[in-house]
Length: 440
View 1 (cartoon, helix red, strand yellow):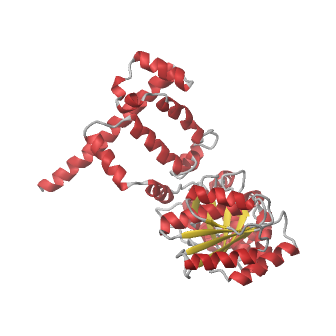
View 2 (tube, helix red, strand yellow):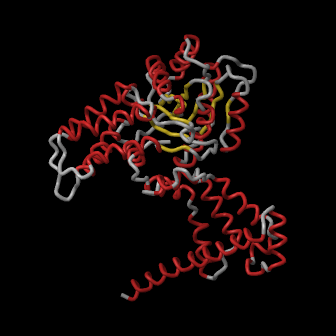
């Protein structure tokens, strides 16, 4: 989502290219361009001005080391100030209590209910805690049914009271039930409105007071830009919430909300959500976001996403298969599914330093796997387990069955063989290194 801001900031830094040192004259021009870039990213004028004043104050009088160019020094200063503006460090959620109660608030359409399901999965899978969802949005039609569907997807129970319209009664009963049945966390999905109004504020304030949650999270649609910041401020004035959740981060958003909320509201962004997949929820790391804005990638987050999908037992079995040259199309298909669970392919690629800019105009999403999956699933179980048996006539049948052509089937088989060879070589090389170490 920060592509345009990244480009504008890169152009701003070029003003310092070729300069021998940072001076008040050349820094003023650079900072002016940075302010324009922030305003274009839908950052409020006051926040943009405050940010640039801090950058300028930090930059003027800096002693630039011989080995560091002024442009590089400026990138470092902007990076540190961006991270500080967004909160410096990641903020954890409070899960103390018996059970811990998390209240989820926000306007209609912000993604509250979907986030509630994602958060339930996040706590269950990463913290190993027993979670219950409470359906307290009695205002929006089908909200309770939506939460039930999400609960089934993440295998978390959803507490409801048939016909009950009072969210306080539902929440109170849910917490009591959770305590009796040994649940560690209760996530309460609340009602919203199309806009901030007194009725909504009174209702959410009363619910907040009644359940006294350990954690109150405000969910906001990042695509609404400065409106998101103003809405967050209005809710915080009444609820004094603990943190913000930015949703729809994969949409057409310029990033102003992410850059402004902490500065305006004084509360940290705790999670960012993108896409409809239940796994698509990430802890907000200001320093890593600053890295991505400045084109440095985010390798740490990429590795963490890979580790979340890593199955140690499955990896050991795969290693044995590779050693015996038994890597099959079933294994290949399973690897594709694991990659898809990590998130949007283009977003993942943008975490690799330098790749994001190269992929700016490339249309790349998880649909790219569809033809590959169709070809693999058009093979017979025997063919998937015995790739070497796929001859010319079989390739023709597979192409017809998958709606592709023989050239595409041939290309996939060639890629598969290359992958199998590369994985075996990597594993064998690793084994040889261990053997050398043992001999020493």
